Image 1 (cartoon, helix red, strand yellow):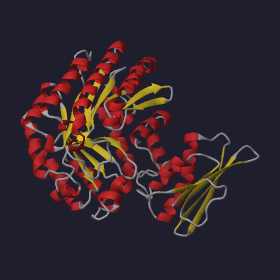
Image 2 (image 1 turned 120 degrees about the vertical axis):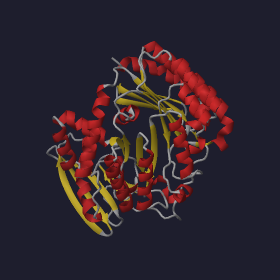
Image 3 (image 1 turned 135 degrees about the vertical axis):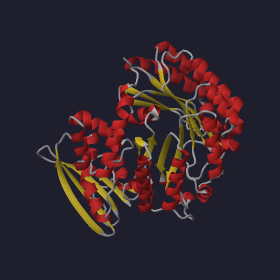
Image 4 (image 1 turned 90 degrees about the horizontal axis):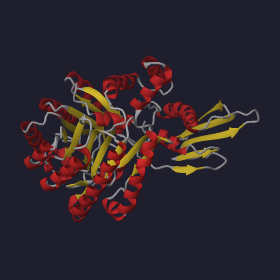
Length: 491
């Protein structure tokens, strides 16, 4: 399929819009003066007019049929407003020729709840914001109500967020093995084990640098999140060392109590009594034990070398040791799964009563490579999985509290975290809302500065551990310079 543009450079939004209808497909691009007329695809051309206006001309070619429309725009329209105008022109045509009506309308961003909150502030309240969702962005009533419910749960979390505080994310980008569906920065520890001692030594230095920065600026830490990868791929001794460094350089001098200290244990095949005891000793108050599915055939197809029974054993061990805030992750749309199998997994999770359950929809980035020979749930099956989850978890007392979307998601749906009241994770809310500065530590970690000159300034460290180690001195010099930016943006 071809994406054609002329007279503007807003191609990224055009591609994101088309992927709502044909996810996980590669596109060709054209900027010719004349739009293509033979190949399927979309076109948006912008022409200045003699009266100072702009003519936006769009067409969609789909299976030989051609749909055309035009809009007259003010001569000053550009940037994000032009993105919206192009989407508003092409979206109805794409709906008409495909017969599809994406549940999130023409929203292509990953943070719809954040957008609803901003509409509230701009439009004068919840009802006006919801009307904008429905009528301007074509979001269904179901998804509009879901976003509104989440925003209600989030309000007290925002209200309790300390001023000038930051959150800290620590990256351990290693896993015992790599799951077939994984699109995160993670490396098999069997392949990268030789780098682990160097990596931990570098993290020791970076933790000290961040601690010095926070001390110099008198910045409190609100939440701490250790993710990856799988942090519990570290043995108990290395895990103890890492948490000890964080305690000595960041937490001992912290002037406020943490609202959350999460370690994403994740893979049940890495969880032991010794490691859980280390987490307890350092005050970790939230962990994840992630089944992804309770169907063993699905786990095998996804490349997860553990069983449902292993997950249940790890979970029960954590509960017996006194962890009272445990999250479980599930993925809707894994190969070999069915609506019935996924529904059974959710029911089994509810029987265990973890404090939170996060349900992701499979991102299709790797689907063509990994799952071409395996039966994959179709979009309608994934929709039914998500619908069952939402209804069943809320009936069981879980409330949706944060949501985000990814590119190429099965069914163009969403990832939603559900929690029992009072067990919501502030880090997830603040990170997805872009409302608090987050300092990243380690390979693949992203530092996000809120209130910088461009609104949000992101500084991402090297994606892979070997790059992180090779460029460590350069990266740490850049990190030290963040102090100047932080000092300028924080009141």
